[in-house]
Structures are given as structure tokens and as C-alpha cells.
Image (cartoon, rainbow, N blue to C red; front, side, top):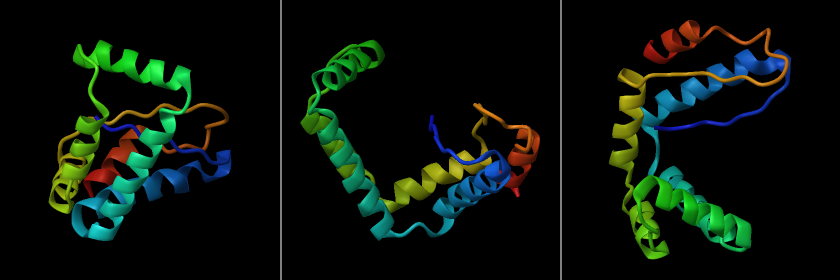
Length: 125
């Protein structure tokens, strides 16, 4: 499962949705090694920065126990992040395009938002 959070003004929702879908499709075809390296570095930095606060650490540990039934050592998480390579990113992006279920949740003034069926069509095109 993948969750994408994004924010914009009400009049730019359609443009943001289109750009997000186009980037998912691009990831399946021409994502670069440099982009994967940057994403890996960002994930590890966010993980380590999240360990600075006691409540964030507690939430992380509780989430791991709830989902996995155990606390996952930081080294294991970092190793899994490091194991992601360009081919795996492209393969995963391809599965998102070809077979993943999609959902959309909007908060705020969203009358100008494209319909979910239109977004699915764009993803499949």
C-alpha cells in the first residue's frame, strides 16, 4: 500500500492530481538511480529525526507492535531501506499503475476536484 499526502489550493486540485499520477507513471518508466538514492537518504533522515522525540518513538514502537507483533530494530529498517534499488522501485510503480486499487480522500473545499474514475483513467492511460 502506498499513501500520498499533498496539499494545494482548491482551484489547483486537478493540476495536483494530474501531476501526482504522472509522477507515479514516470516512476515506472524513467526513475533514475539518483532519485532513488535521494529518496533513500530522505527516508533514513526522517526515520532518525523521528527518534528525537519521546512521543514519536513511542508511536513508532506501538505501530510496529500492532502491525508486526514485534519491535523492529532500527538496523533492520535501515537495511531494508538500503536494499531498495531502481529495479524494485520501477516494478512497484508498475504494479500501482496496472493493478492497484485507488482511493481518494479530500479535506477542505474540493468541489473542483476531478472524479476518482477520471483519475483512474489517467493512471491507466
